Length: 446
Image (cartoon, rainbow, N blue to C red; front, side):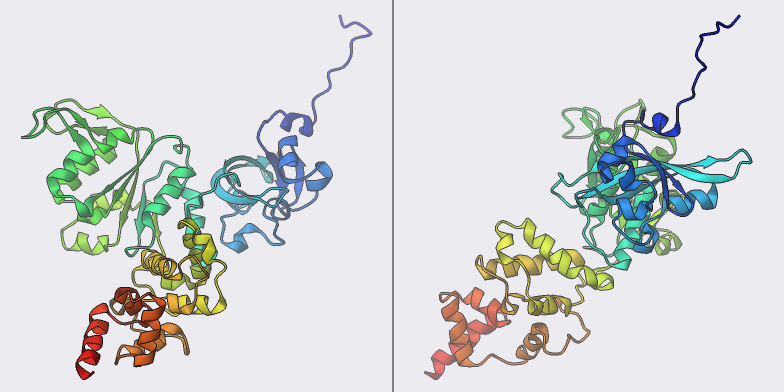
């Protein structure tokens, strides 16, 4: 029998329940409006409930007046209301001090009694904040954002990823990005380049070997699959993998087991594989140089990396980032409009790797000062076939190579470089041999 003074049980409110969650958590309606937020979310993105509740999620965490999908990111809210299924993505958020941070989002539908999705519950975990000083990927062009939108979706999963793109587009950097924003980020990230190793070396590198397996195998050596256990293995230039090893790789991907060369026992490994190639694997399948079943196993989630000429809008940002990574590179910044115009005039068939080389040379020539157009030198073999922008330095230098610069200009270059012919040749936009021959001809004429 219930006592008269017994108090009725009062159920906790939504706010009280979500405050138990230690990480930022928010409830959002189909119109992007925040209807509830726990204390952790309020601390991260506002000053209290009045700072976030009633506002849109993109205003609070993205500091944007439009949904994140309009900026190239994959919107979990739109996905949850469209499919009714949970979703995981990576996003870039901005805290209340406008500092950038990368967060892993886990979004789930909240349904009414009739099963209709009424709200989305979103749990977030910061995996890279403003305290991290290394940017893995740099850019904000539409092509770049489309790529990162795919990476944000696949990073939190265990799916095999195939990175396709020209040489120099940053495939290893993209693989690091996927690893860094996955649950494996605390485990090893291991790289093997099939394009630089012979068949026997690739096999021993990937799978390891037992002592005495072959001449010179004086000790047991674990392979890269074992070293990457729990983490991520990037197999670069997968198109160069010999057919016999393609069969062995497929077996590992299907079973999760490896066997060292010369060994008899299989070892279970937990490795996420990312493959990368600058070759057309479909064509190699047709040519019977790549196994069709392995291709389909690897291409579950293909990501095409745009070439630098397809994302030229990113060149100024990339240039400043690359210079900032060089010793004393900050002295070369900010870049002048003329320098940016000169950088934009080239198509960069070598992509980001070529841009880095151009900037390294410019950094050396600038001798710790601001960069000028005279420091932006692009080798003839590296030059694109398309004409440069009118009036830009590369176009002027292309015309100079048809002949030799005036004698007075050569003397000025030599004086500026302290008589150093190689540096003077770079400054003039001609080869050192051409400059040497011309100087010899002047001597003979004298």
